[in-house]
Image (cartoon, rainbow, N blue to C red; front, side):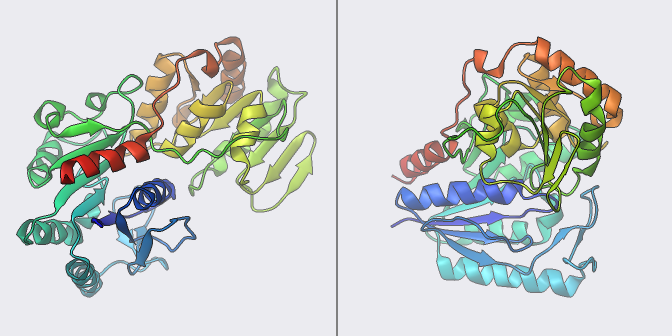
Length: 366
């Protein structure tokens, strides 16, 4: 049985580790012996037959994502970095994998160079040498400097494959990564990685569903949605705000924590309002009728903004830039979305990314 060593780090939200868990579970079901090595805050994950190793956890210190800290906010010191790197390398040596996968690196997660560059070097030196693979989402940070693009290309020389978990018919990787011509001979699209549970039942029928995923930056969107309801053509509908700490019901609004039947709510809702993270967008494109995306973004973090903008340009969704978010702008976007085409009128995007990834790795190893 071929062994896979899969490194993943979530920093602010949980989208990265959720996607990695789906991929690890699918790889294990396809006959691989998979170890998912997680460096973020511990989470309960459905890994199927895959195994999990929890590194000493770190997170982003703030929304800027520039610096790392321990979970209590303590900055990382050299002793912590060295101990975590040593644990990672010892684990890699003990596993002796046939495949090393780094989630997002070197296209992102550059704050983890201190451990990932030694890990990749250990893989290069090992005999037999494992397949070295970058697992990267559909859109990367476009705001990087030319020097940073070149650094990514330099690191990619050690990689055998870059697996892009997206659909080029929807968003091409070249739109966000300026170094595409230099890597396209080693880059393969897999389709989106999705964990889509069958939507059954009538929950959410006719509602407006407002969701902020598993991220830590959704409060402004929930507040704007609550204030926008009365200004829209859907003022008589129930607006369900997912991401609250407890259940509250007031004047047509239901605020509650995230729900396991989210795809059912999306399928039955008149409209979805959400941020534009990878997992949320995949669910929206798969189940929603109409959608407004309000991407999280900063001057440095452009991924969600770019994804939402490019989908809006294709007519699939309506977009409200985060810097313009207010009750008024959101209400206007809701009414525009109602007047536009249904997402269901577009050709479906490719959603077999996890199974395709397993097949591609099996082919390369064979």
